[in-house]
Length: 505
Image (cartoon, rainbow, N blue to C red):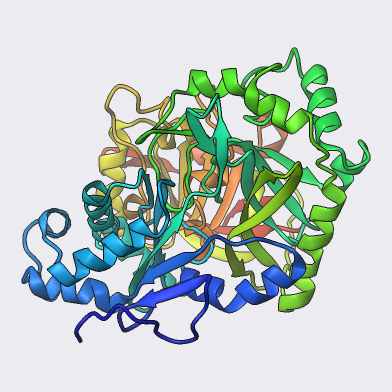
């Protein structure tokens, strides 16, 4: 259908939809929940959503047929052109936000929790650059990993794009723009009540690898005073290695690639993100950003009360992404993304004795039977895994964290992607010296959405693993070490425990 610059659905000063068709779950959750969020006391940025029909018109104009796609579909989308009407709509949207930088965000079915499978980007208010970024976000919908993810999660097709101003304020004498802090959180989980992950600057979603996890119990020790928490915890952790220190407490952020929900912990300058060194300088004692945090009354009890109200209002646990700015001397809390989280049944019966493998930091609950354990130990094993994944389903993947981080691939080596492991049922990460950040961030919400179990291998090999049995049952397959026996995997998020038991043939 022709694209029209008009509202589809309920008109709102906070939310405009352009074009026909679906707008994706992320945008739909925001549209339906914005009035209630504002009544609780949260703020939301104004949003324009380009519906699926907007993309459809682009594809038709450029004669791109997904039923008979060109050899390089993603490149064809990136190189395509907008119609004059589409360009004018985009130009109007950019112009409505003055000089503020904009976020161009993906919104697909089943993607409300920010799985990181699709790209999102921040751009300065430049229509020519913004057009190219928009087409890059569209192209990410057709990547190999994205297609595999939708198949495994059983998601319907449809892709919207959200355009919104970056929530933030000026720092460094006007050179930088970002929120004071941001992060993600859950109103409750199987293990605990409300919790938030906090980073300085732009941090955002579940894929953010750097952050300080806060619960009511942790901040209550400091009377809910964030400034006191930062001061006391930073002092206590003076001798703790960088692998434990969070970005909130002064460790420089790493990681550059921006996916859904703004992964890098950064500040915005001009048309790019500034260096990790500058992040540390701006959050060091006496810096502009640090002084903003330390000189204001961040009493987090009120924030946690608002978080509790979200779950009460929407009737089930919520995943949310948030940011805070200071206006007129007072903190303003913004909701950038929100999604329902279905409560999980958590019944797990663990056996006596030493399992083949055991893990913590668990995602998923229940029991699975798997055939084979693929040991993806080196970058050279990733290509072997790709071939193995095409021929096998329902297996356990064992891999070191360096294969998902920039440290492990800094010399141009491959990095694990969802398409490499799409047919695995259980994923077990080994944290090594090159580990970067929160382990579940390596695959965002992709693991949870597709029903896979995830865990981090316990670091007590004498009491947690039966390596003798593992080695005895392993042979070389597709050029890598693969344990050939059947196994039963039991997982419990509530107990934060996962165990892999060998099954007799």
